[in-house]
Length: 239
Image (cartoon, rainbow, N blue to C red; front, top):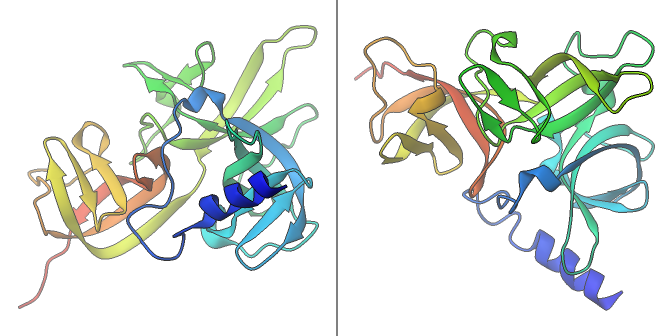
């Protein structure tokens, strides 16, 4: 019990003191598991799912208020020392994107982390992928992005059929500034990662240090941040 309390203290230490670091990048994203469950207890800053999975309220997608009994999807990792399960992202089941609710018998939902992207396919594990052409608009999956997958199992096999994939969460962030640039990568206000390898920008525009921009960001597991910009648009500042 003492070791668990120490782990909880470490898990929540500094969670409200810095906007630069919201979660560390796991060593291996393939070890993350998607679990559907129910919120069984809730405090000011943390709670439990199924009485066995700890979560910080800051990992709730869309900052939707929770209550005991709420059905959720959780992306979970296991602490290597205490073996306690920790949710790194929680999605309320009744707050799913429009059209993502399973409507046919046998279809299920899960949260997955993109492990790699090729010219034609997006991988969410070593042997599970879906075609890149499923996506249109600003969002082009990138390694670390969190996606909501609707799938079904082939009867009598371990093979799955993927019916739809969408970003787990998307948000607009207006009039923020580019705080750092390192080659083709950069950060917006030290909390949103972007890379020119997967970024929608206006023709002729290249992001510059301290530019004021509007950003569309998705949930993503990147080093020292949990958001990735999929679109960056410069703001015309009136003088």
